[in-house]
Length: 74
Image (cartoon, rainbow, N blue to C red):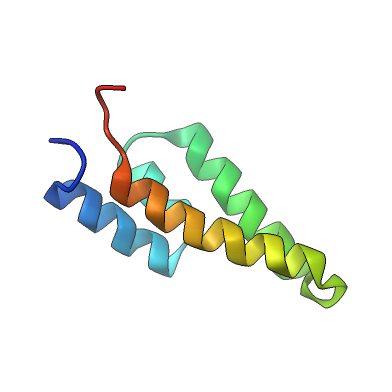
């Protein structure tokens, strides 16, 4: 990947719209992909408890932003 704002980051962010964590997986960050996927799907499964649903929404948006702003040189 070329860095922040590159075409690869845009593709990764779009992947996260459909499946949270997929964008991080496309970027080769397996641990981050697992954390985002577990946070989102765990919270979404427990949506009726309200707080996990909020955590899922935050994880969803955070995964998209994280993939879009990823800079491999850090």
